[in-house]
Length: 270
Ligand SMILES: [Zn+2]
Image (cartoon, rainbow, N blue to C red):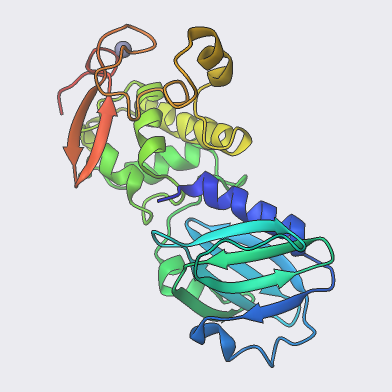
């Protein structure tokens, strides 16, 4: 499932392709077709993301909420390019682009300014990628959940919005926090390190399209390890040597998902 940075990048690409210009809109999913007449002649003012939901704001004041779930994907094609052989939910055509939403099934029509009332958005915590949310805000937000295991809290979109499995592993590696520790056992300085790592790694992931480590491409080329083996600090590296201390990266299963960490750099005790 894509994480916050991937949805953010998709929303930014879609926005750049369709906002504030003449469009033709093709609504194909049954939940979307009902609005076709009302949206005739409308343009799109803004496409943006809230956690894993995409919000497409029309000039008429209507907002399309869509959640990608597991299979949904927004793709920007050039005008005239063949679409993918997948379920097409909607197409926005401009003179130069076709922006297509594939496979998603979770839709709602909202009004501008009322997005926060949607049940999914209403439950979201502060958005890590939001420029108005800083490391200190994140540390204080986490401190409100002292009984939670830090690795679980980072994935819970109600606590913080926009993080997924690779980011939580790498954030805890960079912050040097054992993933199974309870938040209440962490100091204010520990939580501030987590907050700083949240900001830095999500921003880097946006800038480098899903890479959390600096110099990852350079290291991939120089070491011969390849891109996939070089893009993360700890995520998906079970048994591989820690970049900092060379101890093997460990993996535990927590809540059905793999959790990767360096027992030497981060400690292994809860
Ligand atoms: Zn290490």
